[in-house]
Each structure stands twice: as C-alpha cells, then as structure tokens.
Amino acid sequence: MTVIALLSVAPVIEGSMSGEVAKAVDALEAYDVEYETNPMGTVIEADDVGELFAAAQAAHEAVDGDRVSTVLKIDDKRSRDASAEQKVEAVEEHLGRPATNRDESDDETEAE
Image (tube, rainbow, N blue to C red):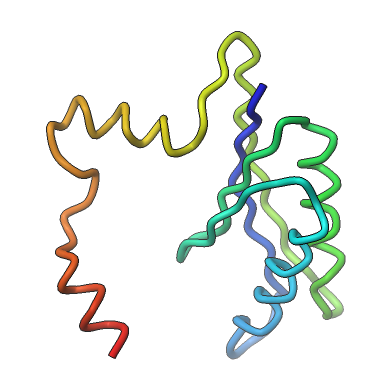
C-alpha cells in the first residue's frame, strides 16, 4: 500500500519562512518516507499510514515559533498501490503531454 500526502508546515510569522520550512523538510529524513518539496508544500509517500503520521508530526515539531500552521491532506487508496509519480503519469497520458506549461529553459533561467 502506498499512502500519499501533501504536507504544509510553516510558522505564522512575518518575513521569510524558508529556514523554518527547511527544518520541517529535514525532519522527514528520519522516517521511511519519500518526499518532494514544491512551492505549495511537500508530497510524501509511505508504505504505512502510521509512518506518514509520525513523519508529519516530526516536521510540525521541528518548526520553531509560538504558532505553527500545519495542513496535511492524505490519499490512502487501499484497493490499489500507485505512487505519486504514477498518478501524474496517468494524467499526462490523458493529456498527451507533460502536465505543465513551463519550458525546461524557464527552470534553467530561474536557477541562474
């Protein structure tokens, strides 16, 4: 079974949150999960929902601050095993193209 989740953890502060978000992402390393961070959160995959909850809790607790906001959305499809990558590929198959309108050259320009 693959459990997929979207996790967003951030302190409720003014100014840059990237350092605190990095602490939350780094906390995931201690768990048996795969993850990928994007601008809106971190997609997490685990074989066990308990491991996913433990990883999310660790990420939440890793953020310093008087107030921390955490959003966790879970897709636990128990009848079939599909990774996050496979879900995106299924959408791209219907589209007949990548599920983005960004050029790879845009990514290279942003990295400079």
